[in-house]
Image (tube, rainbow, N blue to C red; front, side):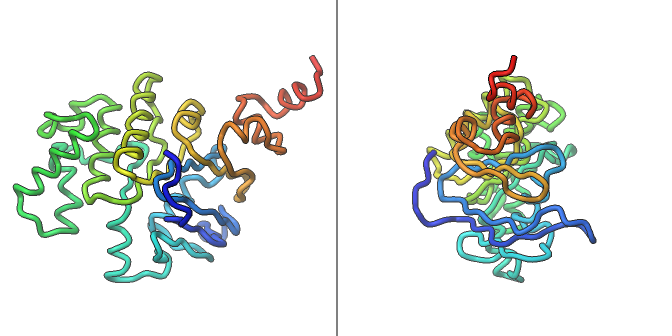
Amino acid sequence: MKPTSDTHIIEVKGLTAGYGADIILRDISFTVYPGEVFCILGGSGCGKSTLMKQMIGLYHPKAGAIIIDGDDIVTAEGRQRKNILRKIGVTYQSGALFGSMTLKENIKLPLEEFTRLPQDAMNLIASMKLKLVGLAGFGDHLPAELSGGMQKRAAIARAMALDPRILFLDEPSAGLDPITSAGLDALVLSLAKNLGITFVVVTHELPSIYAIADRVIMLDKGKIVAEGAPAELREKSDNIWVRAFFNRLSPHDQQQQQSGTP
């Protein structure tokens, strides 16, 4: 889905982050627009997941600001921070569903933490969210009774429990077969189009990137080395590593292809 406004919904400014003395990200800046499917890319260990964890407030950066819908999650405290967290939903690579709880019970967890709704209202919301992700009738199932793809869908349903403006997805296609992965891509596009949800997706799966991404940033060695639409970066980037990534070539093969060397 194309951005619905010129006003950004997320702005990351001068972000430097790491663990102890190790700097993982250095002076990162970018924006995300409402209604956009925005992907964070890069090789293993480049800092993709670290960036997402900073953006959802799990860790405190060493420097910089992360503005979520007008408020800085880095400096927010108390009620202000709680209000920011209500605007975002998160799914993790494993799905992170509680195995001893039914899908309906999993989805009700954010409602129990952030609202005072009666049980019948929470049950209704849980059923509605499951229907949105194609899991109507599965509310009483345990996660172990579902396929990997269905667990990912259930995790998205839980992330939508509070009607967030932004959904963060960490490697949503990891471990899925191509058909199931394509179905998950279609779900993301449908939710972005029909509900106006902004998606921030951490991934390295090329088919998904081409299918869903309006814009991407690519990280390498703690810096942003490319930003733009995937097809444009594939064809026009002046960075050999970036073009190699999008064309699924080694940098050496990319150089040979450019020079015409057999």
